[in-house]
Image 1 (cartoon, helix red, strand yellow):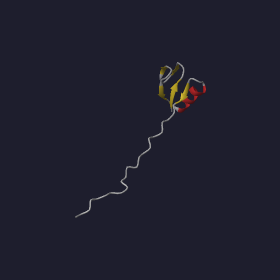
Image 2 (cartoon, one colour):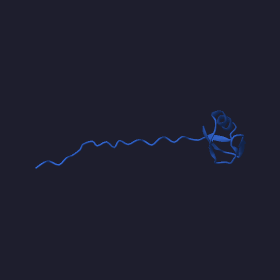
Image 3 (cartoon, helix red, strand yellow):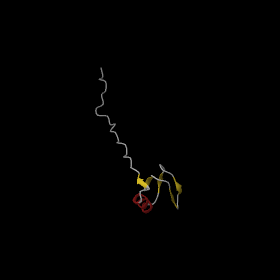
Image 4 (cartoon, one colour):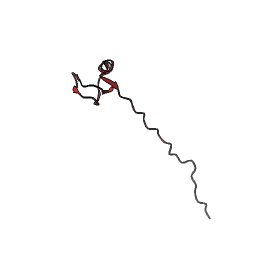
Length: 64
């Protein structure tokens, strides 16, 4: 789970973490840090909407 650190803290696998750091940790560790108020879950960005670039009608010149 990706979390953002809110207060200076130490975790065994990542060492000292400063406010504003965004890190990837195990779900259990992330839940503990969030419950203690040391971190918050990083909001996931939605994937960009895929556009439909299909041609609706193809015009061809008339033969003379």
